[in-house]
Image: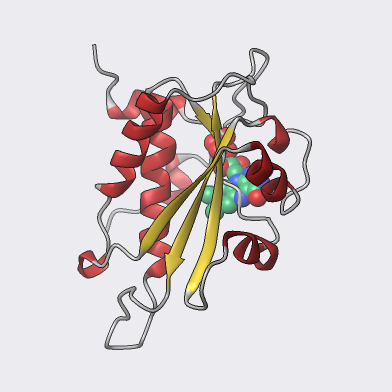
Length: 171
Ligand SMILES: Cc1cc2nc3c(=O)[nH]c(=O)nc-3n(C[C@H](O)[C@H](O)[C@H](O)COP(=O)(O)O)c2cc1C
């Protein structure tokens, strides 16, 4: 039976340790398709998804975020946003690129979780080095790196969250 959305939300957590076995193409394709279907402001789709899975590219990407656990991932998806095509709100010029990219990224993490794959949002990386490594032109920003793979067998969720009563108001 399909996992309901609340159960899926509960099952996704930041996986910081992976098995070496590669992500099957069929699963990767499904994850990428779910990113493609994400909504974006004025449907601009100001994104691209770079799958990093050759040994050479993985080694270069790992220098942008030098953590032991990060290096265990068998593949990465770098979610890139294009500030030249993203929607800017006329009233105040607000650039919606980050919002669009975040939605697509969360589609990736939830879709991966539904397939038994682990992921972790990573933003604390060297974006300048990553941009150069990917050869991105000026308007493009590497916004998030998502390591993706089967969770290590000793990987455990640690989800702590504020109580609903602290964050919801009814007016
Ligand atoms: C925008 C964003 C950036 C993040 N960057 C990092 C990061 O650079 N490194 C890391 O280990 N985790 C990173 N995380 C993961 C968060 O620490 C994690 O989602 C949060 O602690 C909640 O835990 P959970 O994902 O297991 O539910 C990031 C999460 C988000 C949403």
